[in-house]
Amino acid sequence: MIKKTFFSIFLSSFLLANSMDSNILHLGDVYEFAEKNALLLIKEHLEKNKEIIEKRANIAREQARENIKNYKPKGLIQLTPATKNREFSPDLTYTLKQDIKDIKGNIIYPQGFTFNPAKYARISYGIVVINANNPKEIEWLEKSSFLNTIAYRIFLSDGNYYEMIKKCKQEFFYLLPEITERFALKHTPSIIQQQGDKIIVNEICLECRKDSDEEVYR
Image 1 (cartoon, rainbow, N blue to C red):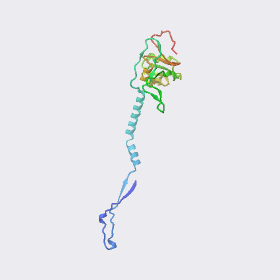
Image 2: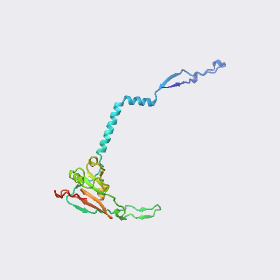
Image 3: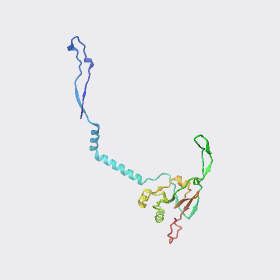
Image 4: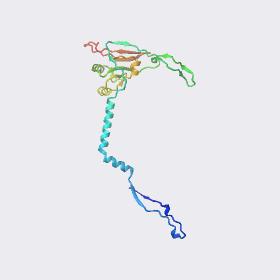
């Protein structure tokens, strides 16, 4: 406890007189008061409300876990199961919407210039797209050579990525709309690979496979 002394100065009681005995400065009465340490107050509050605080913290942690488990980006484009095996090469041509200039203001590439990004950059891994809400596609994936390898990444057009991570013990990613539109994806499963300056997409029809055919597209 910190003790402080409060002085109240009452100047109106200061009187001038001819004699030295009358030159008196009256400082008023002296009182003591105590102020609790702020840290002590916080400690007392925590101890007094321990159960309530712990309950709120547990609720917040549980809510955070649920948010992570059920996370799904907005705007996912729904893909349908492939009804036939099909291979195609999407048009990746991009047209500049404005001039590209250097630091001096000189135009390097003018507005309207078109180019194929696959000629300048390479995807170092293949991409496999499935719908994790479709048990047949999950079974197909588990029998494939696409899991647990750096050669492929698995993207989900739908389903719960958290459950897939627990099930397969590896990373999964959501198929964002930008990727869906860029590669002109319509069906699942789809396998995306780069061959030279082209992107090749293979749609796999699981219903088209013969019951006796155990071959998995690789």
